[in-house]
Amino acid sequence: MATVVETDVLIVGSGPAGASAALALSTYGVPNIVVTRYASLADTPRAHITNQRTMEVLRDLGVEQEVVAQATPQHLMGNTTFCTSLAGEELGRVRSWGNDPLVQAEHELASPTRMCDMPQHLMEPVLVNAAVARGTRLRFENEYLSHTQDPDGVTATVRDRLRGDTYEIRAKYLIGADGGRSKVAADAGLPMGGRMGVAGSINIVFEADLSKYTAHRPSTLYWVLAPGATVGGIGAGLVRCVRPWNEWLIVWGYDVSAGAPDLTTEYAESIVRKLVGDDDIPVTVRSSSAWTVNEMYAETYADGRVFGAGDAVHRHPPSNGLGSNTSIQDAYNLAWKLKLVLDGTAHPRLLDSYTAERAPVGRQIVTRANRSIRETAPVFEALDGLAPQTPEQLWANIAARKDATEAAEKQRAKLREAIAFKVYEFNAHGVDLNQRYPAESSAAIVPDGTPDPGFTRDPELHHQPSTRPGARLPHAWITRGTRMLSTLDTVGRGRFTLLTGIGGEDWVRAASAQDIEIATVVIGPGQEYEDPYGDWARLRETSDAGALLVRPDGFVAFRHAAAADAGELLADALRQILGHG
Ligand code: FDA
Image (tube, rainbow, N blue to C red):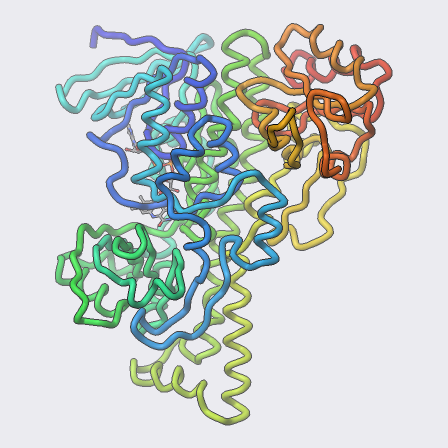
């Protein structure tokens, strides 16, 4: 064990969390090494829904266009269908993922990006390739075994699985992005709440041309209510589009107390046949694997110099498509903080804000995803199908909704209502975009004394922009000469940005007088940036001469309404944010 490799940040895992941590750190010029257990990146589609906030992160990290080029676009995602099989009866649809015209308008108003469907086996190479091109050193078939830490750094023991020997990596910080069975989080003793193994699920990846049953109702998800579909799993059988309309993934449940079934090709094919419902369509099963639905989140994401990110600290079912989104957003929150601490700009106490800001988000999304599973039950209930004695009885219950009786009319209404309620899983725009980091818990947010505006509409369904410190900078289209750009395009790139308007010269002077690089953006008539539609003036919640200081991750850290004492106010705010206060 003679070899000791040195770096600033060691990242364990090359999934969405680890790959995006590496990409952000390399973009910011922070030396980092990724070790990952297997010889390749994800070889199955896994997570796929990519929401607007994640697309904003990827836009800042310079890979948005590559993801858009490879992903299934939003307009092909949105007819979530409930049926007895793809070839069978359709029970109803819910417009999803921003495809309801009203929700679509909200998406367009909220962000310069579009959500898309980017399967994990396509997303990981984009992130990893860009990270490596910018300096990340990546080691496949290298397995994290253990770590120790001291006041100056972390020493991890790693096994090179190709050579069979072990070596040490000495890093200033360690990120455990090693997924739902995180050894780093366990070794660091990050306390987890909730439970593992709530239900059993099987993923079956297969190829089949299903355009006959899907192209007229394009969707990412087709939910199948068939006998046995309520056992374990995610609430019903699911046929998920990987590539329209010939690559697919089925999710089917099993009784976790009985253990996973033997995943033979015959077994996998029998499930595919049941959910597709047309034996004449040629099917090629590519792989099948068993996994469990978990409901766990860490109360704290850090132990000294060791951090957990992604599934290492929050484990939940795929409902709402939050898995890789939250993992990428965790990494983005942590990376700029590590950069500023490593280059000496910030005190290490800035890193405390990582748990303060991200742990509540983790708890929220674990709770939401599991609730979404439970909210599928009313669809079955409407058909008296939660526990039918026989398959024939289920089919009879489903057929009964077509009768011209009062009871059937009631049943139809109940079914429509139950399916419509699934917007909390398939169109929860607020869950995607309303994350706010309260100044009461995070020292990297400076309170401005204004009351919490709360939410005027359902915060899970509707995005509500705000510039109050702790909120994500609202998106507005502004111009710079002939170019149209988003307010979000003026921030990021690893640095703070100060936004002000006419009369805000003192803020601009104050920003340039700080020891840290702060980009300045002056918006107004005759300024470098203009607001021709008046959108920014409507959203900024401050006066022309007021200022917003936006963190590298696009969150407002400080807001002030007037320019008097700008120098002192800005210096005080930065002292607090950077942990020097
Ligand atoms: P992820 O699990 O993606 O990555 C962990 C990384 O750590 C991997 O690169 C792994 O090799 C590495 N690693 C682990 N231990 C290590 C060690 N000791 N040393 C070195 N490297 C180590 N989500 C969803 O929204 N829809 C879905 O359909 C699915 N389906 C699905 C199927 C299967 C089979 C799995 C395993 C997961 C899903 N998920 C999913 C969940 C989704 O994939 C998950 O939320 C994200 O991948 C989380 O990203 P992370 O980067 O945190 O972990």
